[in-house]
Image 1 (cartoon, rainbow, N blue to C red):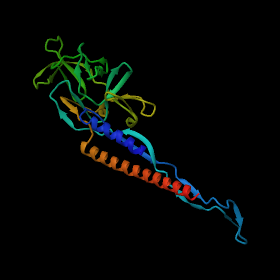
Image 2 (image 1 turned 45 degrees about the vertical axis):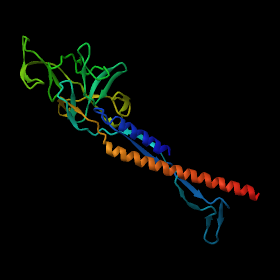
Image 3 (image 1 turned 90 degrees about the vertical axis):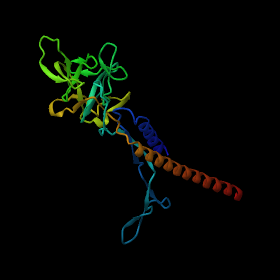
Image 4 (image 1 turned 90 degrees about the horizontal axis):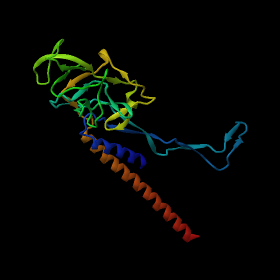
Length: 273
């Protein structure tokens, strides 16, 4: 019953975040309790059977299973579907990797690319954490910057003295631009073991390994004007919730039946005594 309660909590959390951009679903796994090896209790010891040697007076009867226990709650990082938003502030990573953001607790990582402009002009998450480039925070203006598939951030430079490149703006027009910075995109040796911190952020630990900045072919493509949907399938999660409820009820009835049988046995024994 405790195992099913843990599974229900994970399913409910997935359903609550089904519409959160970049959310990755949690999956609860379980393992069996160590089985008990049963032996006969009476006449314990070894006795001789001439001329055939000796035999165990308490032979093994068999094994008794003790149910299941919670083993691990891990995150499934399968990519979600792409959703076109049309906003130049929104970005999506097509492939493995994470945006790096600056928080009061240190550098954290997210797949949620639904960004906004802060009061000081920095690109930020919805919670107000600055998005990091390889040089630090990114100060941009709405509808005045472009991010290419490599994660390079170009700003409008029509009035700059030394424009270096013509790039496509968010409104599909062309203009002169200067390279501001490149998005800091992180990867991990064991991303499966990253810890969720809330607000769709992840932090590292000893098992996941430290963040490595992805470069070259190892970097995912950046799609500006898109966000990544959660990888939660609402129908599957609803089916799981029904299954968990039925399993919980079945175990509950088994416990109640056992209590009822034990109560009947004690009452009848008391009357006989």
